[in-house]
Length: 102
Image (cartoon, rainbow, N blue to C red; front, side):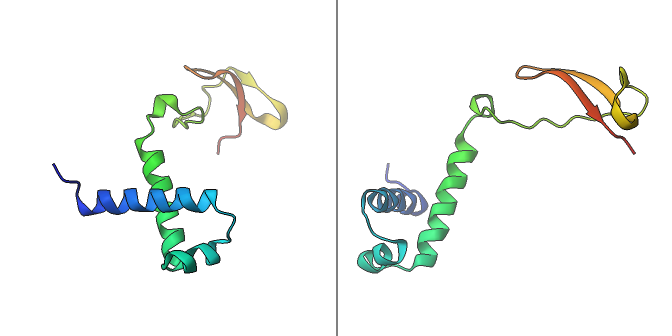
């Protein structure tokens, strides 16, 4: 089955970015030599980076943020300057945090 136009375009830009990384040219020089604008270069570099992040499974990412809701009066003690202390347990973190809750 033939690839769709966006897939072919993305693959074409991946190859261009690879060639740029191997070249010793500035972005402007490379774009001029290849026949496209620096704006297109920056746009596609950003798009492809976002695609890589979107395809990366969250479990493999070492820096994953998880929402946490801290409620007043539910801490395990009092820290410095009146902050409440909370114990958090998770797959990648286990420890004590200090939070000021308004």
